[in-house]
Image 1 (cartoon, rainbow, N blue to C red):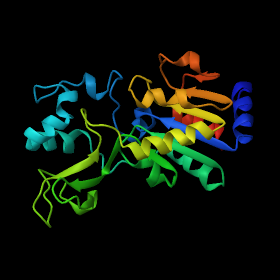
Image 2: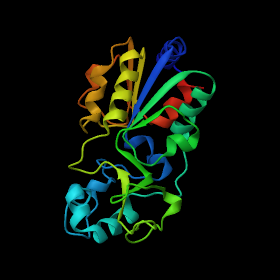
Image 3: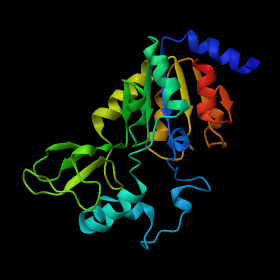
Image 4: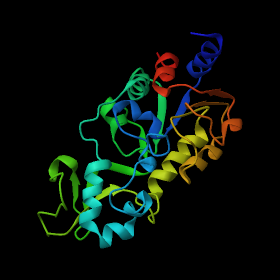
Length: 242
């Protein structure tokens, strides 16, 4: 490990409360495509003739539910994906008795699958579903992963517990995440372009001591951070949190 990583590792070790804020790049090694890279979802031609933002909007879900779900099952749900080095390193650090909170923009549930307990999913999760009529909750294994799922209790349409375009973030999740940021003394941001707001703006609530960005590509907020490493987030986290 080089001198810079040794220095960061020592600072992390001395930090009592750590927050990790992660984006799509955390899960690409698990086979889940991100949005903005050359191989991301935004660069792939859509067979549906509308943008991804439109496909993933609340309006489209309401008025084109069948097409929404056809797209959703094909591109947004990775039921067989497994946690990678990044998820495992974070989970193992928490298991070792450290206070580390994870704020994730991802909807794949892989942090929890790896064993992390203190996880704030600001965009929701493809693992959870709710009936739009009666409000009954379902897990992904409770519903057919094809076509439009309907509630067996009332017959209503079931919606993913995912924040769609035009929908607000969950206030309780956001406030809990911001509280973690306010009281943390080390902030690690990884695998995100820091282009997606309001999630990207959360870093401004950090009032602690040290900051680290791990991302393969430069971001508009690189200058915010004390340390910047342009490398694979899983590889770096594995070294820093071992």
